[in-house]
Image (tube, rainbow, N blue to C red):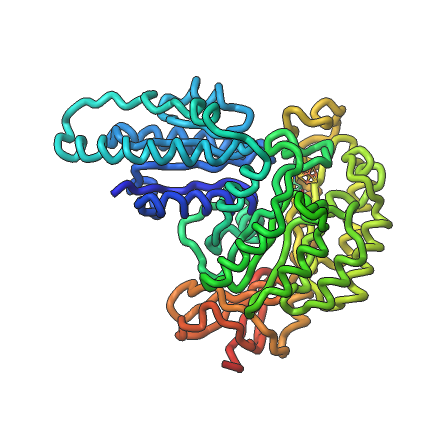
Length: 487
Ligand code: 5AD
Ligand code: SF4
């Protein structure tokens, strides 16, 4: 049997894609393993959003090359955003890489290639196991991915359907908050949580924020048909998923290619499906946010959760303009006002970049001011990373890196206080939570409607997948803790 390992860098869209591939490989008879050393096939899903993630990727591949010395039939492939624009370099600099498939390329081509590759690995593996000392020349024999692209039709319907097949459950550790806590751009998907399901409803981005590489790596926006999305949600619910996340680079730009329906309509339809489940979405763009979306959410609680990830990026109007974000801080705050008015208890999180080219102390303080006004439950904050292809790449930047690091750490310190205050407000309250997984014997991880983490002391692992009431007794910045009071 051929074993595979998924290494995932980056965002939730990458997780949904990799887990979809995992499902495809399992259907081919392969087995997912939890460690690189146990795998015959390693697929690395890459993230280009910040330079740090790219550098980590290269040292990771370097380490994998060592594994190949003892296991000549091991195949290593690279997919995702870096693969979109460094294909030649991967082949040139890493002999150990067998295939490279970019995020914009047709997924069915990759699936066709993998189906054949699995047969090759199977044969090579049995030959190797029969005679481990034989020198078998496998290198480069399988770099034939391109022919699969040439063979495939590229109609947009086909892209939609094949992409949708890539939606799957993800494991807990891909949560963005863990990524932020570890201050690390790397997350991995090794265990699939049956409780959470991620569904890509669109891919690509037309916004061209001046710092962002995504429109270049994932291409322009393509929304998938609503009927396919509804079927995918139903399938996940039937499989036992209880927390569904609809994913897109700009979910509120969603437009059904068949009917022209927009995102609020899609949400309404998802909420009308039978079953006991929660739905959330990431990420909407503040520019396109309309009040009717919040209205649909408020009218369909708790199935549509009171949770909003609303990327601010900067609180300075000068910087927002240079970032090409197309909103002012006042407009952002007005929209935050809408959600607070309709759902005062909503969980609200955001993304912030510090040290964008030209950001002054005054600009940075404007961001801090918005943070104070909104009181986000959590922020994901980053130092600006200069990315090829983007408009900001050539912008003059005279702010020293140490100063940017100071701004980031000061801002994160303040956010830790705010997050703690937000969590403390729940002490003594009973919250409805969804139990996601057993972290260790006697400790369960659950999540509130607003997406906050709750640790439950309980030996009852059967609670995984259930909605329960938890009395909150204590909290840290990241986790509230409590005991189950309603079964
Ligand atoms: N540098 C730093 N952070 C970035 N992001 C996107 N591009 C960059 C960049 N070049 C951040 C934004 C986005 C999140 C996913 O990553 O905050 O919302
Ligand atoms: Fe990047 Fe901006 Fe598109 Fe988000 S909206 S993916 S930050 S270009």
